[in-house]
Every structure is written in C-alpha cells, then in structure tokens.
Length: 334
Ligand code: TLP
Image (cartoon, rainbow, N blue to C red; front, side, top):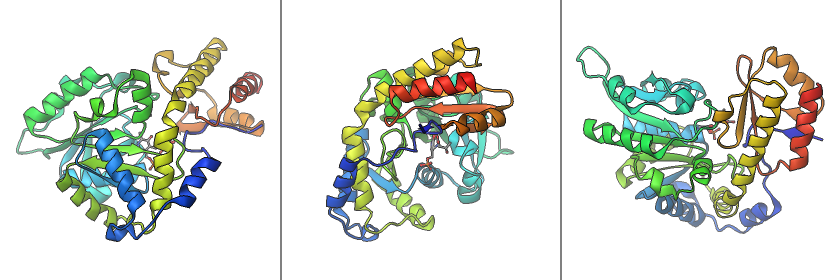
C-alpha cells in the first residue's frame, strides 16, 4: 500500500474533475477571452468579497505578484517567523520585488498584533514597512488557524498606519472548515488574499490572488513578467471550479484523520505538539529523521521533511481510514 502523506498537493484529479476539464469552454486568456477562467475569477472575487481576482499558476506566484504589486523596492514586509512567503519561496520577495522580510514571533503561527505594531519602521535610517502579511492556516507552525480576533486587531494596525495587509490563504479552506466561517468573514479584513485550489481541494494546478480592481491590474503585469500568462487555461480553471464546489466538504474528515494520527503517534512517544494539530497536518520532531523516513518509505509510507529532523504528515481526501491505520502500524514498527 502507498500512503502519501508528504502534502495535500499530491492528490490525483478524479474522473468527475477530469470530466469538468474536458467540457470547459476555453479561449486565449492572455487576451482575457477564456470564459471559464473569467467565470472562476469572478466567482472567487465575489466569494472572498473583493472587486477582482486573477488566476495564477501556483501559490508562490499568487503571493509574489501580490508582494510586488503592494510594495516598492527597498521596503520591508512584516511576516510571521516561518512564513511560507519567505521560508519556502526561495528568496523571491528579494529577487523579484526587491523587498526584505522582517519577522515577528508567532508561537503556534499566531502573532501578537502588538509585536506587528512594534516592527513597523519609522526612522529615516531604516527601510520603510511596505506590507504586513499573515498566513492562514500557518503551514510551518503545524497548519494552525489564525483567530479572527488577531486578524481584526492586525487590520486595525494596518489601517491606522496606512500599510496594506496581505493574506497567504493557501489553506484558508481548512481554516474556514475549522472555524465554521464564510470566506469573506476572514478576507474582508485584508487588502489582498492568495488562495490555492491545488492543496486539499484536489485541483491539479492553480491559485488566485484577489483584491481591488486597480491592484489586480498591477498583478496582471507582474504575472506576465513571471511567465504566468496562460492561454487556454480554462481546462485548469474548470478543475479549480469543480474543486471549490465539490471538495470543500471533504476537508473536515481529513482534519479528524490528522487528529487521530497525531494522538496515536503521541501515545507511542513521538514528540508532537497536539495543540498545533488543528487542521490536516501533523509535525513531528524526530531525531534521525532521514533514516526513519527512508524506513517508512520502504514500506510505502511517505512523509515530508520540512527542516532538520522536522517531519510533516499531511492528510487529504484520497487518504482512507485504512491507510491511516497502515501508516500507524508502519511508523510503530519500522
Ligand atoms: N506549500 C507546500 C510546500 O511549498 C511547503 C506544501 O506542500 O505545503 N503558501 C502556503 C502557506 C503553502 O503551504 C504553499 C505550498 C504555498 C503558499 C505555495 O503554493 P504552490 O506550491 O502552489 O506554489
């Protein structure tokens, strides 16, 4: 049995999703003529409560064009320690937008808004703050959910200081499933949001960045610079639309599976902070991780390495309860 728990990006498009892709009307999206892409962009913009949205090839592309569109070269971006926009986006904020990160501590992925206020630069000797970014769910912290109160308090600071606020909402769907909130109840507090269709929801490709009309116009230019101008992209947008409409309801079960996996592994003595297991991820501090991962992989259980001796298991809708039990058995015995 193969149990791929490296990420929720490893899902294979289902026959019904492929059917939707097959039937999608398409056109050249660089000319704005792909009606399926246009429909997805309008749907997501409305869903998140923004004027407009733009389909992108990936979450990294959505985040990085948003950063470029919000900032000027030489500015700082305030983000949480371990934020994906820096930790896993290959220095692109510096390479592309010409900005540098400034981290605030974020125990369990959640920052103290007072620290964000303190991190804002005010001196003529320092690089000005161009953007504040939050991540929800927070990947590196364990797939943790941002409390609405923290988001609202960060928004108050962003408005008072006149600094835009961006959401890396690659897994906002997981946060919403946990908090039982409508998307716009979270996204209304941001100037822009990046959301992914290829994590957890099962689309093969695709993310969107949403914001004001003027902001999305700028994003168009940056997407093209990054080679993200796609042509008959409607076949991908159709998969994304299918994923949004059909697969959000599947997330809750994946959260229960992660919780079960974490509890059982903790009982076996694995070092796991159970308070962080709020959605579909389980992070384990594991001495000698590479050797152990190899032993698991030899029995078909695949886990991800996120840093030295930091292992991640991620559940998704193509993982069955039997697979979870098999993984537990392998991890226990290997
Ligand atoms: N994260 C991937 C890896 O890059 C670590 C994963 O398997 O979790 N924001 C967040 C919070 C993410 O977790 C990811 C993907 C992205 C952005 C980037 O999305 P893609 O991979 O579509 O560029």
